[in-house]
Image (cartoon, rainbow, N blue to C red):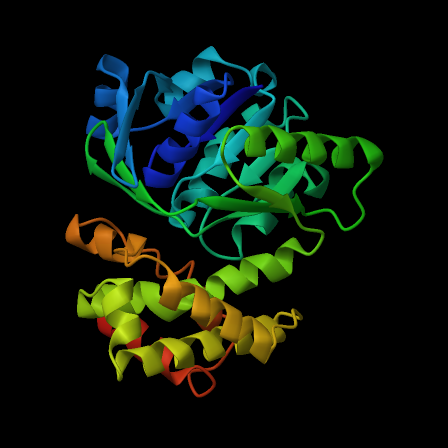
Length: 306
């Protein structure tokens, strides 16, 4: 399988390593010093304290659009920040529309898939989420990741056809064979909202407090705030027509409490002076609820923006 991973952050690099290790041909879109490092030396990935190095075809966005067709790939994975979704899709619209290659989003938030579907159609859009993985760039060309790094994916189109089902079945099989625990869901919107429960619960709070997930969930005060933030995200899902029940909240709360302590992506971004994904996470909640309905989310977002 020829795979393009657009976004060479921690998660993109980890999955690129796994796929290439299994014999798939992987190209990656990167930028800045990280792109320079990937062009000149193998990528180093440290996962659960075990290190591996792999060489990839590293490209800038402009090199990709100028030198390749979208039909050169069997799958395109979006792994860049949600804040870049609209600009990337604007830049790559014509390029993406020249083929029928499926596009899989492994991004934070619940609003990326509708944007992708507007450009390539719901029949080419695979919603997806990375679960139980913490990954970030330590320095250009070096990535650290932790956790089993599971993937859940599903077609954005309500009733996928036989060819789509065959493709997703084969993709799940290939990803599992590559050491990426992957399952298909016919309720991908529910899965995305379940992931947002966690993201809304810990990401912004960790950036505000400078604490990792273990510190947040074991502190008697902060762990209650995490739970309240998850409940507010569940209310936003209901406002979006997606039923997220108490059992979902309990499941996601238990998951983050029992997961190895990690720095959230938002905390890492804050430490590195990068733009925070507030719009994709807290913004997704507050675009669907009033401040009175999501007071804790609103307070944390306001404090981070100030």
